[in-house]
Amino acid sequence: MYCKNCGTELPEGTRFCTHCGTDQNTTRPVCSVPDRPNTNLILAILVTLCCCVPFGIVGIVYASRVDSAWNTGHYEDARKFSKLARNWSLWGIALTILIYVLYIILLVAGVSWAMWWDSCDTFFAGLI
Image (tube, rainbow, N blue to C red; front, side, top):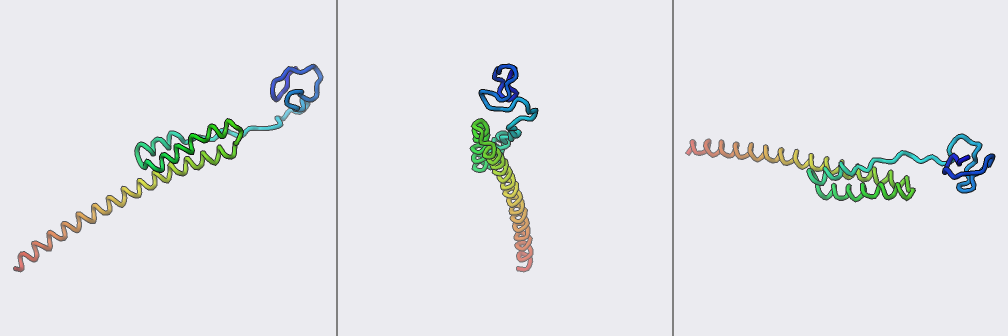
């Protein structure tokens, strides 16, 4: 007979495992491990390479902490690091989009102002 939880070989009819203490008569596991969170490392790397380097680097740092926290049994910390890596990466994308939109607005405003200025010069030149 083997333990249902850890797999240790036990004498036949043993109620509790001598290694982990699990009750062999129960059918449900004593401790369930939650699902492993996504590290979001690929997203953080893409943000670093394509968009916003500072936000991407912070995202990479948090993404690299997810697996080490998970492997040491700190499941809540792993989830927190995963969420922080995702949030920093998404903020980097949002900031980059905002900068490009502002750049285009300023470019259009500058061109419009330059065209207006040229039309004023020709208008005043005709008056003189």
